[in-house]
Length: 155
Image 1 (cartoon, rainbow, N blue to C red):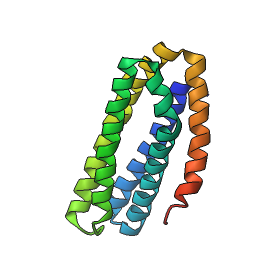
Image 2: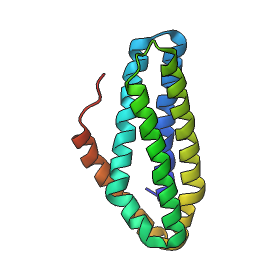
Image 3: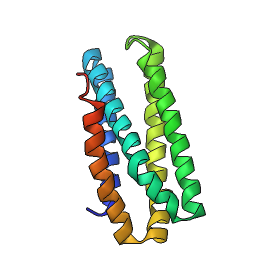
Image 4: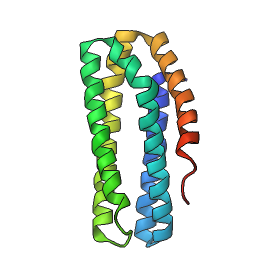
């Protein structure tokens, strides 16, 4: 699969989980909301770990501009990780839970859009389609490994 399509597909899958989470909250189904929150966190942890294993090291070899974009990408994921830690400590009935999850969702939407708009085009320009697609294949293998390492979601 083309790198851009793969990233867009992955981002769409997470956005779908975000939508399902918001719908569960609107319905007052807190059990489903917590299950979805755990699934979202699992997916985000797998994504981060697999990028750290394969994608970032390869992308950093694409030159200074790509390296700067990767650094920014990593920093944004640190913000997401911090928000995840904050949410994890909260009871789902706590008003702060919804506020922190909303902030996390907003941050991830912005992060995904920037990745698609800035990082991937710069990497394609620097590395070429063939190398970028190879890196994406390596990333997919890393995701499978990381998913096993992270264990099942708690739902």
